[in-house]
Length: 402
Image (cartoon, rainbow, N blue to C red; front, top):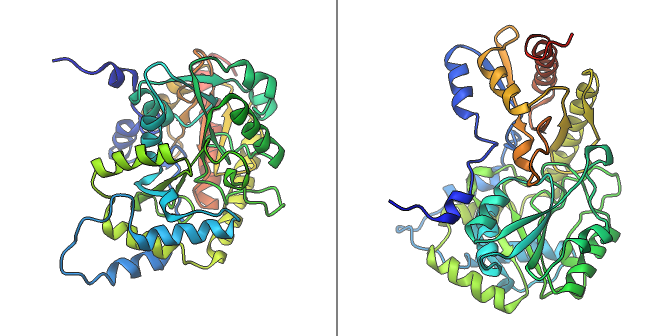
């Protein structure tokens, strides 16, 4: 039986690729420290559970396709605090930020259309773009330069007749790069000049560590209303990944019409999760401030530990809760399998996300990994310690290097 060409262009998530190996390691009695997935361990605010438990309707009905009014109003008020004025018609509630990204790609891309993305990038972008028949045009970066990518000449040099959009994550996943206001304005100017869409993935918006107190948002930039689609989610901000509530935001009427078609085709997002998510937006801002302080501390613990491992190259990330790391090994994919199948230290081993799938350019990232510093301090220290011990033994046993 025939399988679609678009599906063949998609790949399994590299972040979850080694799940079978980790389960086998656990079955063998090993403890696996997970640095491979951005699953926050901070408590979800009680407001979510209180709101869902208070649900009293006798029938759990379909919600409106673009989202429940209580949640749309909550998102609108949240953006007002960011000095971004929205109508509720500008907001489309989705099943996580992932669905928002997929529907955006389906709305703006035709087969062969290109999307410029700084690499390394979140690997699932590839799936969303390929599913729509599009193609990624990578904007290369280097570990030595902290993965920064805002160079007008380089970006404009990639634009051609097939270019439809620039997709960015700010702050960045997997690099932790945070754009300055000037860099955001430059990207906006390029998009306006060349009539491109900007897909701004801002699910880590509050997780910024530069001491300025600035919360970045492309929605504050004037003159790009028809160019801009913002992707957002409650998953990271409120430590509620399992709720699967996100949104796509745009003032472009044509994109709104397209998004509505896809939203109606899947009928609605889960009612109870929307009710819980609406309550999250009413949580005191101190919850987010505490979360940011905690992740900044974890970043510092992670970076300190990594810099103590001989041969590791790492730059301090300024946002999100990820860091790309260059390891002194030949292939981090092979190394990861070895860590789970042949290595342990007193019964402990570790997982990360190998770096190559975060790149579009062949051969890039083979000696890099993404680490999610989402574990509490003692576990994070132990995980980094195990990584260092594993590197030393792998280099000796598999690479012949003392």
